[in-house]
Length: 181
Ligand code: AIR
Image (cartoon, rainbow, N blue to C red; front, side):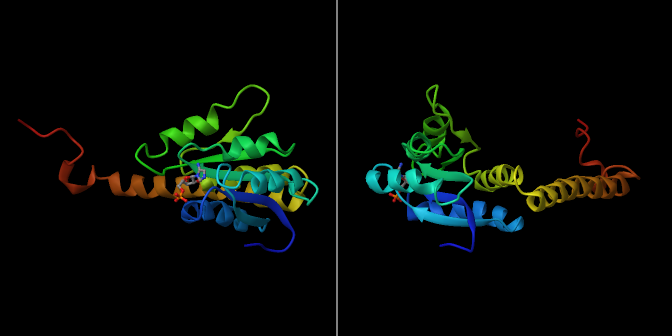
């Protein structure tokens, strides 16, 4: 998958990761930032994976997002093969539901950092990559500012509605109060 002028390289450890990792694509689309998505496993295709990482900077990418589950070495391996900032997405896959991947991604040894988001946090990975791109792109910077303002406005609108709904006491006849014994 690709679009014109890709600025963010996204790598998934397996096709089974795509459903979650496409959230990163959607976040980048929100800011009209081009991306390129690849499947490449650090364990099943190590040469291919390191080649993708090594060539990313010369190809014009500004950041890499890498998502994997289980023994998720992909983000760390990618980070060790590029000077670009790497954002790691631990994915819930298998019996430990992402706790294994979280530790593998976040617990990088000193020297090779991976900016780790929450388990399944591909949307936030996309936002973080957008913030990196925004450092050198005023259009993206303005779009990001607008996004933050929208978040705040949504909270304000929710609170306004809550104030109206609660003006005459909690809705549902007092369900929020402790039941009388
Ligand atoms: N994985 C693939 N190669 C190395 C790792 N850690 C991960 C994938 C996926 C999980 O293993 O990122 O989350 C299961 O992959 P599959 O292909 O068996 O569904």
